Image (cartoon, rainbow, N blue to C red; front, side):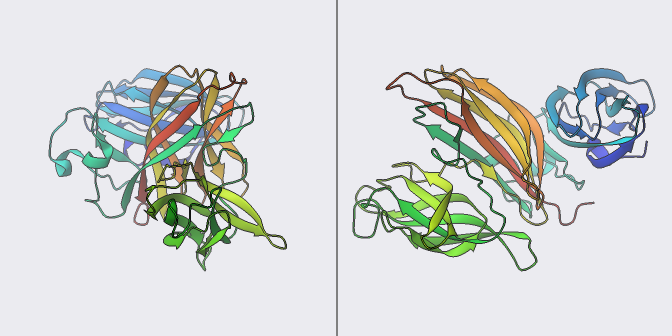
Amino acid sequence: MSDLASNLTFRNLSFPNGTSTTNGQTCLGFSILNMSITSSVVAVCEIQYGNSESGTFTTFYKFGLSADVEKFNAVSVRGRYCRLRITNSTGGAGVITSNCILTQDAGGSNVHNTNIVKQDFNSILTREHSDLMADMINNEYEGYIIKDLNGIVSGVTNTSKRNFWNLDENGEVVLTNNTALYVVSDNNDDRSGFTGAHTVSIEYIFKDSDNNFQRGIQSAGVNGTTPQTLGVSGVAIVSATVISAGTNKANLGNLSFQAQIGVGPAVYQTLNYMPVGRNVTKLFVGVPIKNENLIIKEVNYGGTSQFIGKIRLSKVIISSGIRQVLLEEVVDGNNHYSKIDCSIQIQGQIQYIIGEFLATATPPAGSANHFHLTARGIFKSVENSV
């Protein structure tokens, strides 16, 4: 097989029917490999380690791959070199794609020495046990944006599917074309001169004249229960904040951030949602823009309730709307919180990521139900990558 970019990061690598291996790649003395792998055919993949590039390699992680289904996991590096061994028994050639994050546990205080930013397609080195927001890159390298993608759903009262972006709707959060954006409250105290929210600021995604995604920031007033134009058009609203308010210091009603998708009479579709008193939206949707990828290193999920539900993380292909489930975990509701180390790549202009909660039973009347999903992600510019 052909040589790969270092640290086992590659796209659409061809492999024949039978068993084959990639060339050994140096692990640079790092100790944790967060890797996600997807193949075009059914195959078995082994992550192997050895002490020399051409010496004996030992399998330390093995799993099956289904066609077009992504698997990811964190595995410990046991040698100085790493490679993949793929057994393809489908009867025809296929391709395999790998994305990885190598994590160092040696610590150290100098971010420039220990948090090396690789020039490969999307390989990133970080420190184990670091605070990603404060410790890694932290705007010290041009072209990186570090964000926490947060989703919160609360007050679930029935078995209807509930999305993190809105409690009542199941619509898409990324539209096909630029659409006029609006904000509306379910409380008339959210408007100028009253005690609730007066002005909001949004970060939105829009398509430019070349049909590429771009980011924009816009602020506008809230006009109570009357939809108020935000003055811009876009395909997604990825965050929103109340930037001025009356004596309540926050929104008194639930704010919906919408797109006007119909006229005569006007029809609106909710893209984002801010519960009462939240001040800041908790929307789980990651939309990389032109020349950018989103790499998610860790996912935290859980909730407190009296019934069982599921947390689901999905990748959506923009051109077709097809969803690929990356993670689906049962949440038992009894203060059950979990963290998963992973390496999930979302390609700009091609894919975006969403989080959902699915109820599997009807909760008891009057129960307080709350679920959350948080992913720590790095939006990385790939403009100069190979």
